[in-house]
Length: 155
Image (cartoon, rainbow, N blue to C red; front, side, top):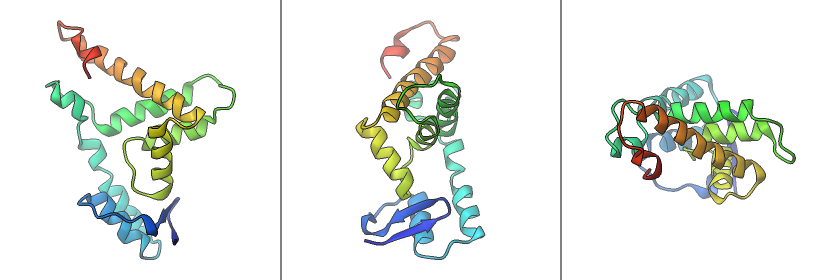
């Protein structure tokens, strides 16, 4: 098993999977080369897709101008940032998990994403709750121009 550092992320090369994801391809390329400023810039440039990719659930509901994946992750991170202190919950870990919960490419991101998906820590449980609350807030904002509350319960 080989671990490589990619900026602040590390990647376990024994878990490489074939994927057509441009982000994953870039991360795999970065993991096999030395860390460089241009690699980080390439990675961040490619992450721009999070800002322009609309959340699928809202698109399926035919919401006009739905939020992007980045919009959703940002507000969840703010929820974690302003949340009250909770015993046995690491707020900084919640912030990181909220930011990465919709992507899973680099090792640290993948591990946080799996922890989130498996609901296996106090932080994952809190961030799952943030995910639901953020979706409800967004639905209410969309609903301001709609006549049905159906949207809240059918995502």
